[in-house]
Image 1 (cartoon, rainbow, N blue to C red):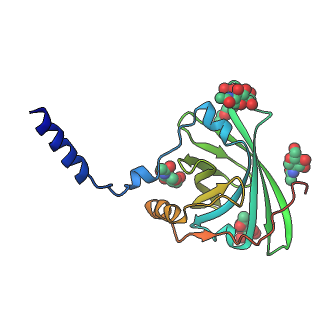
Image 2 (cartoon, rainbow, N blue to C red; image 1 turned 180 degrees about the vertical axis):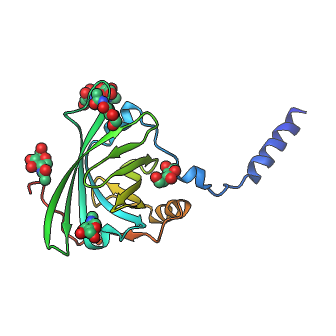
Image 3 (cartoon, helix red, strand yellow; image 1 turned 45 degrees about the vertical axis):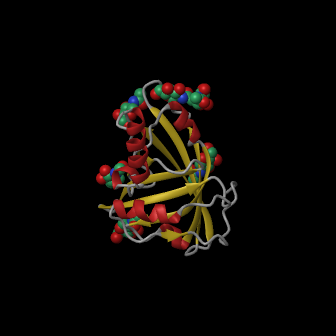
Length: 186
Ligand SMILES: *[C@@H]1O[C@H](CO)[C@@H](O)[C@H](O)[C@H]1NC(C)=O
Ligand SMILES: *[C@@H]1O[C@H](CO)[C@@H](O)[C@H](O)[C@H]1NC(C)=O
Ligand SMILES: *[C@@H]1O[C@H](CO)[C@@H](O)[C@H](O)[C@H]1NC(C)=O
Ligand SMILES: *[C@@H]1O[C@H](CO)[C@@H](O)[C@H](O)[C@H]1NC(C)=O
Ligand SMILES: *[C@@H]1O[C@H](CO)[C@@H](O)[C@H](O)[C@H]1NC(C)=O
Ligand SMILES: *[C@@H]1O[C@H](CO)[C@@H](O)[C@H](O)[C@H]1NC(C)=O
């Protein structure tokens, strides 16, 4: 009887096929425990993007520096995000300082340079994946942004494309790795 059970279990185990990942699996909000929040601090380089707005990454190279804000209080968990971007149109580097507030529902919001709502999603260990919506001149756009610690991180672009498709976002734009990044003193 026991031998039979074992055989049946082995047979059924052998028959299991890896089920394709559902969108629910692919776009899971990141659990923002303190540990995960700390892992979002520091420098991140934008490597891929899918945006309803003109993909920023096509004309810019950008990196961000995330830090705990000086205005972080016991009531409001806030983060300072400095964006360092090169604009091909202006042929210049520029910097934007934004302060994001983390809300209980896991959403991060900011008002400057444009009102934005951001949700971090699970992704590779050295990556940051942001599901974002922002409003420019009364029109709201959505985007999915992939950031990595260094340019050497090999990202699974196929996975990123699937994630963008799950969110019904436009085709993915990928950074040209030859593009120079702005220095951290602007
Ligand atoms: C997260 O960062 C804060 C401030 O830097 C520090 O006090 C805390 O110990 C860190 N937590 C973990 C889990 O690393
Ligand atoms: C916390 O943030 C909320 C919404 O962003 C704001 O209304 C409130 O005044 C803030 N509280 C403090 C103590 O900064
Ligand atoms: C920021 O504020 C949150 C509470 O809103 C607190 O848990 C966290 O430790 C604070 N971080 C720092 C670095 O003070
Ligand atoms: C952004 O913040 C840094 C550090 O606090 C400051 O030196 C810089 O002038 C700020 N830049 C802008 C454009 O506000
Ligand atoms: C992604 O962002 C959009 C726009 O804010 C929102 O409607 C959607 O629920 C978000 N999805 C996830 C999984 O965060
Ligand atoms: C918003 O619209 C005004 C007027 O059309 C324009 O001057 C401005 O550049 C727009 N702002 C952005 C961020 O596109």
